[in-house]
Length: 371
Ligand code: IPM
Ligand code: MN
Image (tube, rainbow, N blue to C red):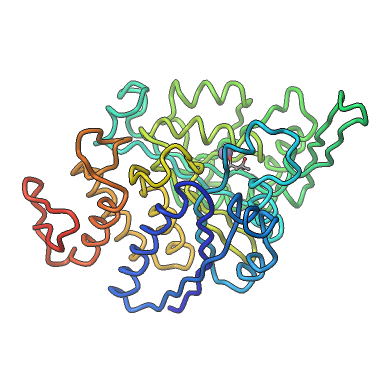
């Protein structure tokens, strides 16, 4: 398969983790005889510094022409405490989501057995957790009309949703549930919000089209509690933009590190793949950023194009790295493995998986043999 991939590595640790994903995708292309080409473009704070805009036209045009987008991270502390900044790096990502119609953000959350002890939550609580979060991504309060009064003392953000916006992401979530454990939980605040009542009505009306899926509902405050009390009750979770943003960060503690969580943002025509972590400016350039979230996002890219075996190969290699504790300091403080080491182990595992007999007592990362 030929794939032209736009690479928007962005700010902070974005470039270093994205670099590892490119290594992995290149190894997959080689192994399975695909032709993947990569083209880089600016986004975020670095794009503001260089061009004045967080999403330069050239970047958007590249994305419109590409088959898929591999995204790193955006954000810079110099904007965080400056609410009056006229341009902000985040606007680049939001504009990209809207311009490409990426209405569904899919975030898998899994508790790996070998990492159960790394989560601040108790092992018996998180064991067997495997949740697929479907977050609506181009509507709601993020994109509603915003106002600020002239004296600067009053502001508002409008939250609105249409039937079509709800249906298109809900269809994806129902289908995902059908391929999994057949349970769909809609998270809303239908006891207070009109938009949530609309979500409930529309999703309930759709349910008969998916008779094998059990649909249930949770108010978002209760869902936030359930996510840390009993996360293995969830299979597929569906929710609107802002609730999904918050619930997915909360769910990330289940895996033991936010550096493990991948995501895919899908529309009818375009698709973007990005780790859910941010730009982590304190770690930039230190070689300590976990590349796994980015690498698993690349696996989601492969899945998206039907390259299921290829995606599975990447996930197997990642699981092997995790099992052998070939992980960056967020997961293995004493191992001394860098971002590059972890990427290289996964790359070499993919290259050699058919011939390899891995012996955990005898691993040499980055030296071509892991025998
Ligand atoms: C995310 C991020 C973004 C969001 C920010 C960077 C605008 O937190 O992808 O979850 O809020 O959607
Ligand atoms: Mn977020």
